Image 1: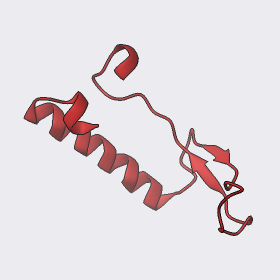
Image 2 (image 1 turned 60 degrees about the horizontal axis):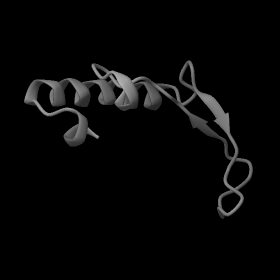
Image 3 (image 1 turned 180 degrees about the horizontal axis):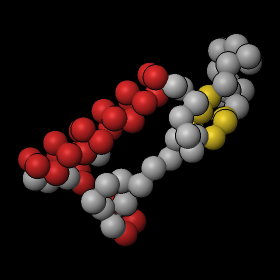
Image 4 (image 1 turned 135 degrees about the horizontal axis):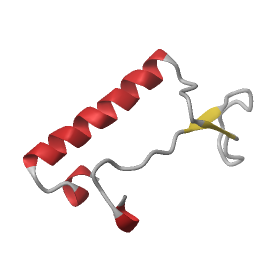
Length: 67
């Protein structure tokens, strides 16, 4: 995504820092504010006791469909 949507070096660095902040937040608390619970896929061999969290966010500095 970084190479496709962020062409300049500054914008790529900004995007990398943005994603790093999200990853850090998830390490601190996997139930990040704004995330939604997801079921474990039925085809998966993982335990049904697990819970997936989906976190959606707007891509920074992008507009339209790419954002």
